[in-house]
Image (cartoon, rainbow, N blue to C red; front, side, top):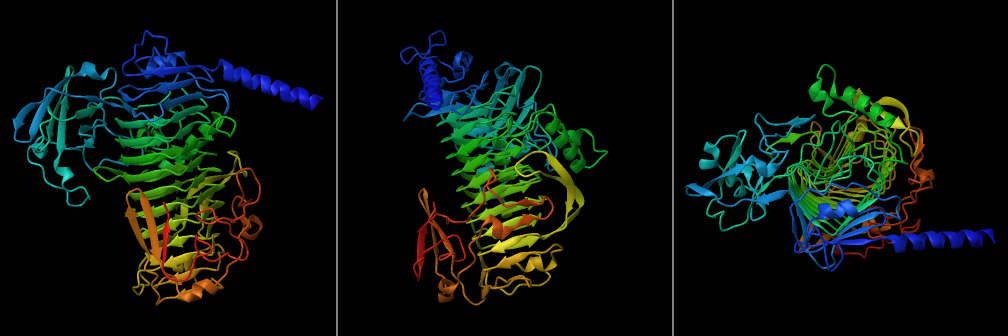
Length: 632
């Protein structure tokens, strides 16, 4: 009877939420004095924000909305959210830019616009420059503003002469595009922009400049349980998102919990697309403000301030970022310092990150996380970035699974000063450099690794580790190197004899110098890739080239290869939590975020793996001969 009463009460509460929830509509043809109904929609999203409470939905219809969406309230739980969504089948754009007309011709290709500063309100991106800890400006100023011609960003120059007489940058992929340049000057009243549009007349094309620092960001923390779905979001003057700073991307969660960011197209951020990061009060670019101590010490201090500010699973993180397309951002597609803990990042397509190469810094990647605790990074396609995935400091309990990584310049995957445990399984890594690790306590299982592997110690930095599945710090330690596990992977070399002096080696030779113990078995080494001396039960076929090839056809990607006959006779161990043991420093098991045991019982596609078909690599039940798999 008590159970029946409880079920009835739950049903009544659920129905109350459903019946009390409201839907507000927004249309470019609407009126902000209307009631927000489907027949009388608002004109701006900002007005709908003022009306929305937990459980409500804001439906935005097709059109371009040039505004900063600043949520005033959030939801109360996963089932009582505030949902912001684009209307089904309609293209709703949120832009951080404004259209500029009235350009005056200076000379062939070069035009000038004088813009009153009143256009920018209280923030002028052409009076602000990109700045922050671990940012390298390469000897010049970079304004947070940007100029666009028909949706494509131009290249800022530090002198007017470089706009009048542009020189192609032959060191980047977009050499032709680098001749489309701009320069600005700003005083108390006006901002003047000179731009080289080459053969185009900006008064007859779409010419835009960024005018807002973000597109979707709650100004204050504590705005939880928000969903953002189906939008095209672009062209914001975002600032450098250092781990010691307030991190504001074009979509930014601030210091909150339980956001869902899904099915969006996110592009053309000066710095970052999505940030799941920290807030300002616990420190903002503290190393730049005080260089009397090392930046790593500053970050340790920030970490403890963040803990005192309520950084735990009950209050921060647990976000879901899925099914988004993110491109043309010059720092990261997704980043987060501590705020990405307990989050799931899945099925996103991230590409063209840091392609203009006008500035540099130690925070650049397709995905860059600090303190990825119990995070899940799976089924993402990341390519044509500087780095693919970068897990920096305090990665613990995180699983990186079934990702497709290729054509990244520096490497596909980088672990920096982490103590583990973290699990890397069923990934396809095809860039020239697949893995760099300055960490320990990792398990690499059933991956296809076609690039180099580099491992080294870090005796000079102490970084925190935690109680399992928690943000509670247990201690701090340096990185000895080792304590890693490699099971059932396929390593592929480039067919050339490896120089013992080279630090870029294919296979696991680098682990010959590991200080702590390592565990390795069931791996295959093809085409010149070499095993570690400490490995057992491996297959080395140095003379065989599987001829791995990736083919992009429209939105689809196909992987082609052919393994030799020996491959089909090799069977590895079935990998579980019990098999992997504990990471040495945190004394923690390789487990699921909820503490249940892990079993690597699925392959890249989700096909079942068992003790009978635990062959090396990310695929089970392959047919012999040439293989052509659709991997995206």
